[in-house]
Image (cartoon, rainbow, N blue to C red; front, side):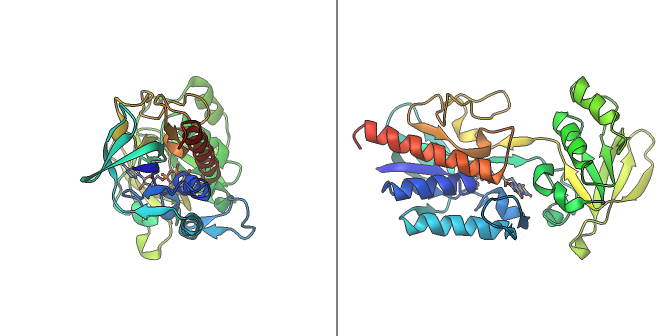
Length: 307
Ligand SMILES: Cc1cc2nc3c(=O)[nH]c(=O)nc-3n(C[C@H](O)[C@H](O)[C@H](O)COP(=O)(O)OP(=O)(O)OC[C@H]3O[C@@H](n4cnc5c(N)ncnc54)[C@H](O)[C@@H]3O)c2cc1C
């Protein structure tokens, strides 16, 4: 019987582990399929406080893990495939082995949707990004491309005009999902150039480990052409990692955990932390802050229950 099990080893899970471990709760952290979470995919992180020169994403994550282990957190491989949260203690199926826990912190994150282009994954952190707030700064006076047709694509394109010399916005259709106001703001921005009815066929150049350009195709005419770009931002949404919780805790229509105040979910004793609940900020520091909140709530809950 564990006191705390944390699902996910990203910023939220690691921070929850530091706090619950220091509180003597001997948390178990289930690492999941993406060990270290989204930051392990990136290179330079310049906006996490405390690192004036910036820090490599995987190093930041490793530091958090070591910090949690120093206080007794136990990391284990595998992932949660099934959960029974209908009564306490909760029962968790960690890829074959069932474990029991008095509290659960869900820090399973959300994965960005990608275009599945041949070179896209190889160039993440080297010019391909899913986060303008994180990476826009690296593209001062550079040529930027944003792909997407929803509000987040418009928001990212507008934001990126603060940095880039130009922002090309590529959308596969003529009609946009984005709200009228967001679309108008982008249309009125002189730095944004729209490419409608257009899809990206590939992003170059994996052999140089650097984005240098893209191959585009007009879906109406089938014309194919290339365009030089330095920064390539994919803004076609995120998928929260909540499949094992469907039908057990309140999720919104897109699958994000619905917060019931603080870090509480609809199930007493189950707490949320990070991008799995947050569709707005999606930053390392906000995920870490949320991990801290979940840990403090779990700690107080256990104390109130006499554990
Ligand atoms: C390329 C890239 C660059 C970024 N750069 C920055 C930046 O410079 N600055 C910044 O502040 N933010 C940046 N971000 C955003 C930041 O990485 C996220 O906001 C942050 O990682 C969210 O942390 P999290 O712990 O909530 O989730 P995640 O980091 O997504 O971690 C989720 C964890 O849950 C695990 N998991 C999922 N499902 C299961 C399961 N069923 N069982 C067990 N475990 C599971 C995964 O394996 C993973 O370990 C970047 C994101 C990306 C993709």
